[in-house]
Image 1 (cartoon, protein in one colour):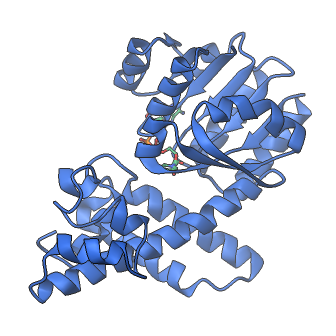
Image 2: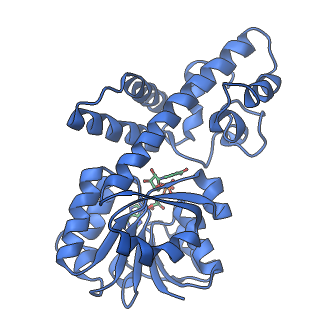
Length: 296
Ligand code: NAD
């Protein structure tokens, strides 16, 4: 069993840390929100007063923060974590951030004798809680093999997609598809309801037809269709609209950098930006349906 520092105990990090504790690992945790730390302590973790204190004496560091600026701020710079982690330790960043940021931090880690992988996840808060996440890994094979038993305590699938930063590129591809599919699923349901159809019957039909998707079957955007979906609890919890907006912005940057064309991805980014401006930035991203359905 390993001594692990876990930093970032939000919607995803909280349940991921809980699964590591269940697997018998010992955790030193830190988050800026005291309530998040308290929940992890109740599950068996030790609280650290700072991120630097959390990494004291550990073999593995895991971070699960919102965006590039948080992750760069955590690891780099004078008071940054890389200067405080014991040489030889393994660093796993599971946040979804810019591929260039992942590469930069991995290079700085290597210069300090630390091995690092980017290991963003897919599977949502339900997957984080159930321990069934998919890890999408960038980094070298030997480092991934060290990380594998830890990742397997939090997830079911581990994909090695390339060198440092490649995990982020693959994650952005997945989320761009998800963002587009969620928006159009909301439109399809709104169209049906506008014609007097029952949103549940329409969703059940689509779930066994060619329009089926995770957005229809697991995270249906229409309230009341799926009891456990964010839409049925006022769009609370889940994957925030502004996190999807961030990912689509990263996909747009990646497209500009490579000359790729992403017309639907760009359109979807604008829809999530409009939903954010409408005051729904902190709601689950399925609230994008509100742009086309005032009763949702
Ligand atoms: P969240 O906002 O719920 O949690 C982030 C946590 O990080 C918060 O508790 C915050 O207080 C903490 N934090 C921020 N800066 C910090 C710092 N410097 N030190 C310590 N703690 C700090 O976000 P989330 O939904 O858990 O998502 C985390 C990452 O996972 C994001 O990059 C997101 O894009 C990605 N992701 C989320 C989901 C999802 O369904 N929510 C799914 C896949 C991937």
